[in-house]
Amino acid sequence: MAACVLAAMPAAPALAGGKPKGAKATPPEVILQLYAGKTSNWNSGGHAYWAPDGRFQGINKTKDAVGIGKWYVTRKGKLCREANWHKAEGGAVKAYPHKSCWQFVTAPDGTVWERYLDEDGDWYRHKQSKQVSGNSQQRLFRKISRDLGL
View 1 (cartoon, rainbow, N blue to C red):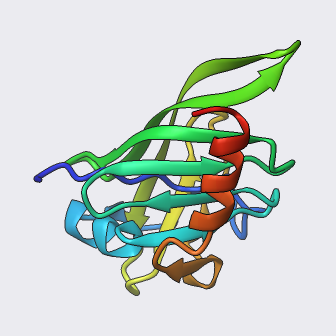
View 2: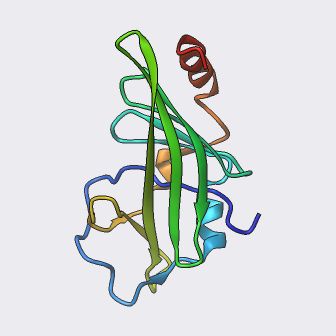
View 3: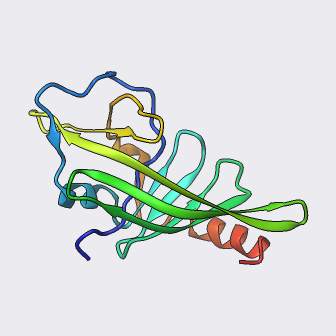
């Protein structure tokens, strides 16, 4: 699928506040390679799985809610996720829709930078070390989903 789903994770502290000099929008194919089929381990303690077919699965930092939805990459170097986050509240499971996007650029030296757009965040280097191949949190996702009756 041309605009396969992707979503970046909440930003780590920025290494540089501004956009790197001479950086250009990262091609969609590069962003897809960075995320498709991988689990992102966020600084906050949450996790996100970016399925190659565009499905998104997330787990929040307190491990009591899951996000279910889709992710995609745009031609202009953005990764977005649209998910319903399910959480038990007041004896019922409630769903909260949420869309998040990140913008990616590649510096002249080949370094990929990103920023979280929802908060107009600072630019920071993409860290592949925060990702692992496959759906490493699948068991936990299934357990929380079962506990919520999903």
